[in-house]
Amino acid sequence: FPGWAATPPAERAARLSALSDALAARKDALAETITAELGAPLPLSQTVHAGLPILVAASYAELAASYAFEEKIGTSTVLLEPVGVVGAITPWNYPLHQIVAKVAPALAAGCTVVLKPAEDTPLTAQLFAEATEAAGLPPGVFNLVTGLGPVAGQALAAHEGVDLVSFTGSTAVGRQIGATAGGAVKRVALELGGKSANVILPGADLAKAVNVGIANVMSNSGQTCSAWTRMLVDAERYEEAVTLAAEAVLKYVPGERVGPLVNAKQQARVRGYIQKGMEEGARLVAGGPEAPLETGYYVSPTVFADVTPDMTIAQEEIFGPVVSILRYEDADDALRIANGTVYGLAGAVWAADDEEAVAFARRMETGQVDINGGRFNPLAPFGGYKQSGVGRELGPHGLAEYLQTKSLQF
Image (cartoon, rainbow, N blue to C red; front, side):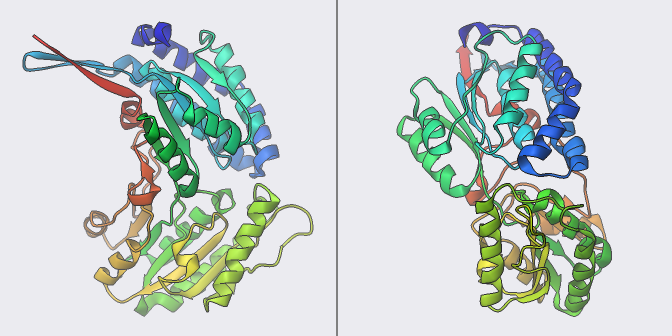
């Protein structure tokens, strides 16, 4: 750590630029490995799983070169210095993106990193480690330790040599890591679960909002923490939205546009939630708990109607291709439902104009809101309110997580 922390930002930027190039040179191998480990369709692995991290690494090369690590405030010089050794614990659902979203800003800040990847996707992490070597990072700056979460992950979070723990995963595990880190008074960055609302206000383009909403959840087989799994529609257009959703989901054929879930445990978990929704009285309009294919951990893309806010499928994160459609009476009722979970990671608002959508979004208790189909921005801060986490990833806000402040008084 001392040597890398003292390396000039321009040199750190050069290494990150080389890392982006090394990932680009391995893009095909990375995409094929992610498809093999996770089950994502190859086109998705190529564009999102492998393509996005290349851009993120390049963005941190630019930030490392331009970031103001020092500023004057009155008679003081304020220094932003690396926090120390980072323990990064990453999930399986976006195995390369989550690695880069933690490792790249940490390296840009001047931190060294010990990465513990998810046990379901270790080979993707091995390819990333090869890229760090090709990029010319000094030995010891990036370190890879594979293993099970309760063993290797817990050991990393508790280790006295680790100054900050950055974790992405379930809220339950996040609580454990937060408690472990808190006992040692070390920093944490937690990107946890979500139950994001897709709010369709009266006057919005209903067909577009429904189709984009279904596509959002079906991407990556629903294994996305920020997926808009709750679709909120006004009472007057509710049944039209249900019909549109049932039609839209038919395009997502298991084995073609929708891949399998990561493992048998996840498949059983999601099918259990679908069964629970039926038992609690939700109306099944597409899909169901039966496996759509004999081979593979597939789950049928599923749409529920007549979901009430207190139902399990409206409150708990399912992490599969399941959409719940809820009815609201007016904008205040929609806001109550949208904010009515313990999560607050992402969401969407559709309205007749952007101004109306923004006014609603300002009242949502969530970290990121797409307005009328706004595109994902890899430089914008990503992270949650409430039990969806602590801290932010991506862009300058993501870099700030790995810095600590020192004031020099004159």
